[in-house]
Amino acid sequence: MTQGSPEALRALADQHLPSDVADRWVGLLRPAVRLEAATGPDPVVGRLGGSPKLPAHVEWPSWEGHGPLSFVASLDCAALPVGAVDVALPAAGTLSFFYFDGQLDDGDALVLAEDRESWAGARVLYTPADEAGVEVGVERATPNGLEAYPEVPLTARPSMTAAEPWHPRIREAFVPGAPLGNRYDHPVCSQDFLDALWGFDDEVGHQIGGHAHSIQNPVEIEIAEAVLDGKAPWGDPILDREIVEWTLLAQFDSDDAADMMWGDAGALYWLIRPQDLAEHRFDRAMFTWQCS
Image (cartoon, rainbow, N blue to C red; front, side, top):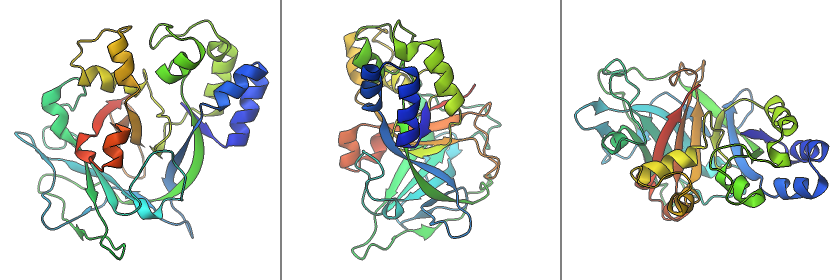
């Protein structure tokens, strides 16, 4: 929901929350890497758009019956600041993100978390580095029928992130059992604190790790509902347990420079279970998108 320096978020909490609540809220912040357009001497850690590098034996991702996916972004894991996130990203190699963006069918087929048959419309590919740490992929041409997005080099800005007060982890920390995805009676849900959070930062942005900046309800809820086939209603302990199994891998905002517009100024999100991340099982990552 909100990102900034630890000092700024600490000051925000101290100004609007009782001291004991502020301490607990700050303890729930999570580190993340914000990805911004690189300029001048900025070190480049990834890019939006352009052409991906993939091993020669790896096929360009495709959604059967619909066609190839568009290349959204790539991340050079070795270039990230050490210790900048609290998830087990690979120490080296490249993560490449693909999404069926509607270019081939004028937006007729949608990739939706709740539609299992559409899950093939969003993919994360991991290209390991060789023993010398050199990327092993070769640049691929964009498939016929697709137009590559303009390339935008990205640099990393370490940051801290705060989740919305109705995020399941925040809810359970302060008011266990409060209604899922709704406001509740507690200082972290007061209008004063919410106004301060929204005034502090309202940009989704591009991000690796940390708390997702959801545009609607927390994206973890959407993913958990999808994995459970919608069979566990809100308030069911089974859904609550599934929600906390998922963590943000990456989010990519709409971006004018890259000519990316996800719905109505929306964002793309990939989430993954920590165990799958540690085992580099990026084929198990889940996708959703939200817009206003």
